Image 1: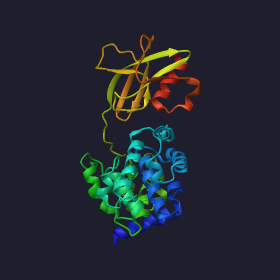
Image 2: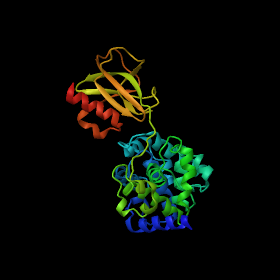
Image 3: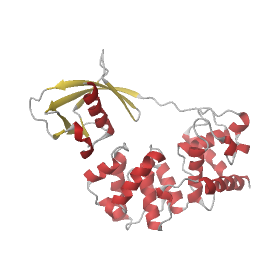
Image 4: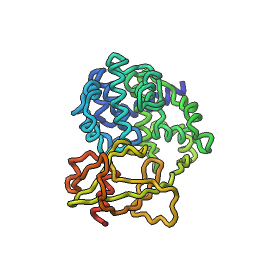
Length: 327
């Protein structure tokens, strides 16, 4: 009965306060499933407000799985440009190809089948199962985890481990409206139970929230160890253009266009020009100006004044901006 009360409170709040998001609009079942697949890939490690314009452009140019499966890679990357984590869009296309080939052009509704697709892990499979197929899954994204930690006052390291959070989420109960309930919990974390200054006065479940009762909303964070890495970035300039190469050397920004670079192993007296954070990596970059001696394979020249015409990762654009403004 208690589970039912908390579920109803959250759903009632959601029905009144939910945001109007493009992947939530009423449409056919087939489109809803496709919209869910695309949006969940985009939302991996990216905020909703950032994703919205990308989603709208993506759906306009690639309205269904069939189009996605055969869409030209260069144009696909251009649509994704600026969202980062480009492996996601490559996996999204691969997933579409597999769905068409092995699942009769239909997004699979089985959790393990979903997990077998490129780029889909436990969280994304749970989210798609709940949102696209109304199955009783509660995906644990950062928003839902935050609500759970505060509601149950989970503080120590063992309590906030992923395995324990998965066990504890049963406190939220289930609903016949699983698709709405999964989104309602995410929405509650995003709009009310924010990382700082949660808006407890209008929270539908604050009455039984242990953090609210204790007036302690500070969250224990899992410490991430950012790896310090060192790179020598080589700049070749000719006729006011910069030389870029296709990256087949590093695991990050794979197959994208970057400046020629080499990683250095903990160099001494390393005076870097530029610092860039990528995932759990802290990149210390020293820039070296070079003269062309012989042609470099798989390279091409870009005009810094026409950056918009190229498909480039944010990392490369920031290097170009730095070179143009400071060197």
